[in-house]
Amino acid sequence: MKKICCSVFILFSISVAQAQYSDVIIAKWLSGDGDGKIEVYKQGNKYYGKLVWLKEPFEDDGRTPKVDDENPDESKQNQPLIGLVILKNFEFKEGFWQEGSIYDPANGRTYDCEMWLDGNDKLKIRGYWGFVHRTETWTRSK
Image 1 (cartoon, helix red, strand yellow):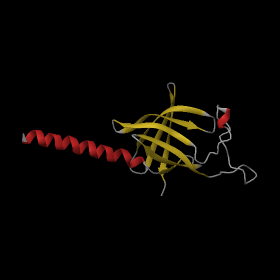
Image 2: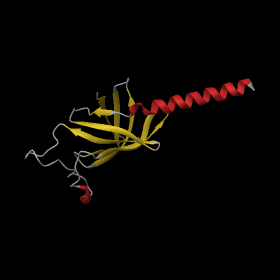
Image 3: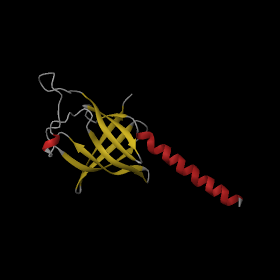
């Protein structure tokens, strides 16, 4: 009986630690090119990320906010980029965040995506288009 209780406690402790680790991604991240900050948040058991800052948030007139004009859905082309959800539906499995997607407002495309931490302050983002992939490193923003 003592062994069973000890095993249950160990399994419970591992699952709690894993759940806590999965949330370390919840933060603001500076994109690889430094042009934007993305706030990663959790909704239910999934992780999402929205643009919260842009280096150049306005059009050339200095007043008009930049919009998602490359979106293939014409009804969304007037949506401001600030607040736009670009990371969607990530689940924490096997030590990294996977089965999600990333939207690139620069070209209006959505890619399959996975993410993992490289140390505490570096987030690796890998987007896939078929067998082709690109990996970018985001930095935790203070």
